[in-house]
Image (cartoon, rainbow over all chains, first blue to last red):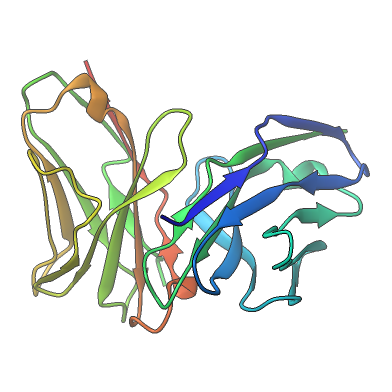
Length: 111
Length: 115
């Protein structure tokens, strides 16, 4: 079945460092891809999405490009802030079915 | 708009007791999804409901677990005779329609601890 694999954390960075969180997927067909973020004590929020190959999703300085050839959707940010500390989840869905999530990657940014 | 409200946020039960988790979707949302997050695991889909109907329960354990979303009131996830392995965070999400899972709005979760 469909699945999502993302890099294990925690990822610990200093403020203004470059961030990459890897995400690869296995799916039949052409899924939509998402990154969700969960701040401490809160629910998951949609961060960005891409619905077809080569699409780039972006939001709040974060970007991810849908790479069909490598089945990847890596999350990047050029300069992280302390306020970016959270758990990041990669997810996919097909044809309106339930979202399939990765295990989540904890990001900790120190000043 | 209060968003998706889940309660209780934390629940402690002893083995064999029942746990009831409630989820009030966003105003205007009639589709509810329940997910479970076990320690060191991702979020696993459990069940998808519309008002008074279970649409997809493929992720629900066959025994002890049930869910409902009545015409009036919140959606309820019920776990009977809880065991330690049920300890997890349970997240509810809602959407206004079935047009795509990308409009899911999540609650803050209910954390169940079974002693």
